[in-house]
Amino acid sequence: MAGRLGAKPAAPRRGGCSWATFLLLLLPVQAAQKADLSGEAAGATINHSLALIHRLQELLQDGNTSDTTLRVRTAGSDEVKVFHTHQLLLALQSEAFESLLHNQTMVTLHEPADNAVLFEKFIRYLYCGEISILLHQAIPLHRLASKYRVSMLQRGVAEYMKSHLASESSQGHVVGWYHYAVKIRDTGLQESCLQFLAWNLSAVMGGAEWATVSAELLVLLLERSDLVLQSELELYAAVEEWLGRKQPEAPVVVKVLRSIRYAMIPPSHLFHLQKQSTVMVRHYGAIQDLLFQAFQFHSASPIHFAKYFDVNCSMFLPRNYLSSSWGSLWVINNPARDDRSTTFQTQLGPSNHDASKRVTWNVLFSPRWLPVSLRPVYSDSVSGAIQSIRIEDGRPRLVITPAMTSSDFAGVSFQKTVLVGVRQQGRIFVKHAYSFHQSTDELGDFLAHADLQKRTSEYLIDNSLHLHLVVKPVYHSLIKVRK
Image (cartoon, rainbow, N blue to C red; front, side):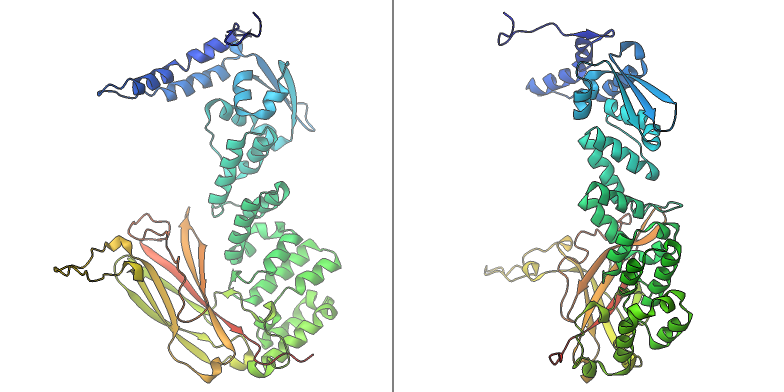
């Protein structure tokens, strides 16, 4: 009886290839599963999955067994690529193909040129579940996976992009990936790209992709206090170059220029910019108030300045400057072996009033510090044995403290930032940044997931830990700002 529960209708056959033929390919896997379920003591698993994948690839090459034809046309070209495929396999991997191929044996697809070039690679993935990918192929492959709703490939390409932000490319790729992530609303990929650009901004500003930064992205970067670069003056020079290349509308120019932290630029350089910077001369009226306030900041003591102005804003907060005035590079050889210590000096604050004042910092690094919960305690037993503690129970610890106290510290607290340099494909970049604000504070997860015992650890460069220690003075208003 038609439609009766349990009835087994005959498998359809199209173009010389039946579902029964495809199911025969699965017999080796089924045999392996039965061997596992037999319960015999000498059981074993027979794995022929690679042979199965090879057979599926042969199906794609053998057009005589296909039941579906895909015609891929490229916009602006007469070229048509033809693929003889199998509806079952396409439908298993892609919800979009399952819908497109319903009651059809031939479908014409329209793709942009970069998608069409990779379409054969894309189809091959649907047959064997494996694909090789290069940096310039990431976006078109992700577009194909998204368009045809191949969710596993879509996630796989996104993860590839997140893990290859530091890969070397002639024209750069992170800026393009960020703009693509914004377009497709992938917030995870978007934030990964934005963080990478912020922590490696000096390299980005000196590369070819700086010219491809959009106005929206530039404003987002300029708003951040975690930018890693040599100085605010370096940032201004790069922004001036960007404005000269892009020639944006006046409102964009003003917004960008007002995002520069002029108080972080020494007054001698500010005087020079007012005369030599074409952009500043042209738009001086739009930023005159910021320049005037910056000169006032440099001319008075921070305590006196804070009586009249709100210093609790980004204009008076340093970014992560790599210049020697604000920190020091510390390379620790064989960091898993012993405790280490070092000292360095920084300028008391960014105000020119404090330019001659220095703060000395003591730094302690311990590769196997034990938290209180894991420290040895004495047992109440007669033996008085100490509970066993394994070396691997410890975790890396970093403490940065001032070597002295001074009345000059009034109204100032210090944010310490530790940048960890790693190397990927021969290129050194910042992948981790840790911050703590008081001299006695430590960040609980400092290098918590770093395996410093292994020479192949991603945290090590030639068996050394590369740290850059940055101290950022933060001013506080001691007296309420006058209205």
